[in-house]
Amino acid sequence: MPDRRPRVAVVEDYGPMRALLVRDLSGSGFRVDSYADAASLWRQFPHRHFDLVVLNIGLPDEDGFSVSRRLRRHTNIPVVLLSGYGSHEHQLLGLREGADAYLVKPVEPRVLVATLNRLARRLRADEGRLPGVGGWWLVEQGWLLRPPGGPDIGLNGHERALLRALAAADGRWLSGESLVAGLDRAGGGPGRRLLGRTVWRLRRKVAAFTAATLPLEEHQGAWRFVALSDERRPPGSD
Image 1 (cartoon, rainbow, N blue to C red):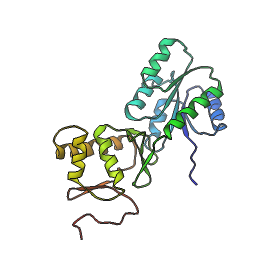
Image 2: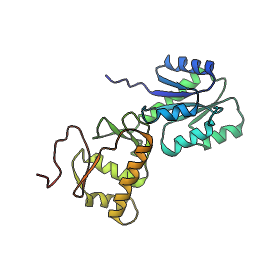
Image 3: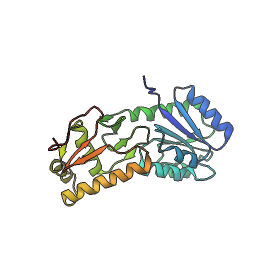
Image 4: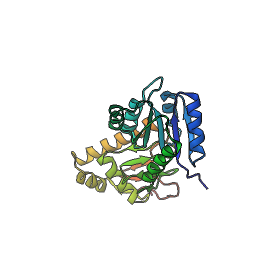
């Protein structure tokens, strides 16, 4: 059976503190990967899916505020900031930059574990499986796309409308006209052009964050989210 324990990325430059965090979180039921700097974290993003990130603010290459801001711009992975600064100004800045929680060092392990468990429960809400290669998911009411082994990717309204329609089709081919109608309801410009732009943006966004290829096929104006078990042919190809 697949390991369903939440995977946590711990980014902490001070070795002894990093070792303590790994020990405490591993002993509390999390899978833990640890990194000494932000660059090491970013290198793993195309290859590994993280459910949660625990992030020290004072990193040597990129401060935790910047990392949190980048994560929030492109994903919805919950972030817990750790800092030796406990002022209200620092806490407010961290939360404004996208962190879900700001904990002041020294952190009580039980508080950190309780915080991560709360955020993990939020992640499990309203997940919907896409009929995709290797397991693609729509998460958080469809506003996030979770590739196999990659990070959650934030979607705009048109991308969400397109993927929800394809997910509902369960691997069947959908005409471009039906997809255009769904995008029109979401608001936007001329339908056919909007469909093309939405697909282009979605492919580009996925390529930026994961090595997986978006399994979205088009044939003679019909579209589907490819499923491994689906042996049906495009309409008119026989």
